[in-house]
Length: 342
Length: 73
Image (cartoon, rainbow over all chains, first blue to last red; front, side, top):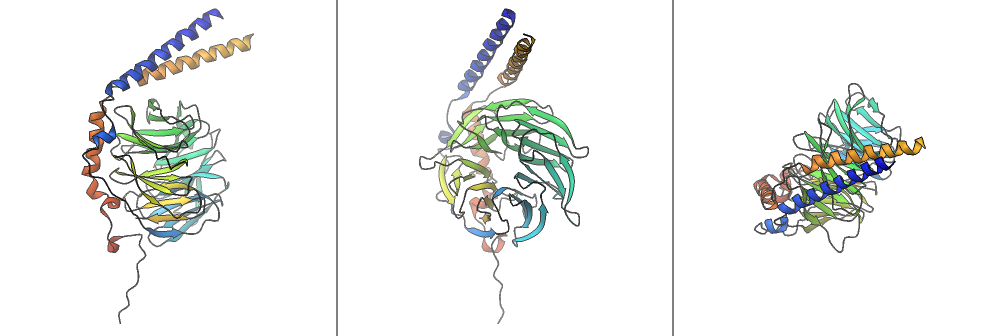
């Protein structure tokens, strides 16, 4: 018993030493702030986007939405038990997928647009073929021991999921089996995003940490702290060198991957609502963040200033997305509507 | 007695895993924020022109804007 205690004490000492080493290394490169670096950049002025369409069709709270890579189709998920695939140019509904479990929390469009996936409190990620005459269940990925909070396709044969069981999983859609399990978070995983080069991904969790993972090796490469509550939303900056997070602590943060630390904090004394979702414009300059205050606030990512707001929803904005061509923003809400702005 | 020892070994395994993870994270090369932030600024500036939400979208090329039909009299 004494030997084990001595071993624990030694390991704890080693941990403390390593943590101090990491903090010192971060401090050593902390020679300026993003706001200072962006001093010479012209301010944006007020960014005023107009509401172009309100998509009506769901009968209950919308929890998630995801754009197709064609920047025209979009899929939304509601706790009315349906996934709806929309043609955002016309506002028409193209496909309705009835769900086995209405408690959906996440939805994803495959890059090919042949498949969509969803999951939630059933702990299962279900993949549907929407190109068939009527939507057909392709796979039920059932191994998580907690709710499915987020899913993203790499291709028609691989999908990444994040779960309330604190793990993320890479699945092989041909076999329906787990290819890799990513364990390191100590709180429910709430959100994930793939790097532009598809070699890495990031996850945000209820342990208030964001983690960068090597997709193929399965290892956690970097851990980002600073938030004081659950991270609900996470996204890569388009260059792949930075990440943006949104949290229940009412702030968004940008972390640079190469400096391994927070470089900007997006907070406003008047904003006392949690961040539910976020998306970046194509240049990375604008951050669209959905909040519990029914609005989507727009931030200048470089200067750290609020530059606009998308107002119109009658309840919490639960999901936000910018299509690949960057031509607009879609917000989804508990008020059951999706809105398109540009 | 054995149950307690099991949980102690588990704690040691967990602690070792934590040390291993911290070693991975400690090993990375970090770059000065003055360089990395400047790089992010440069990226935004270089891609400004291809960001429709910054440059604006004309009514005729706006995919989401409801088109009004033209009536030829």
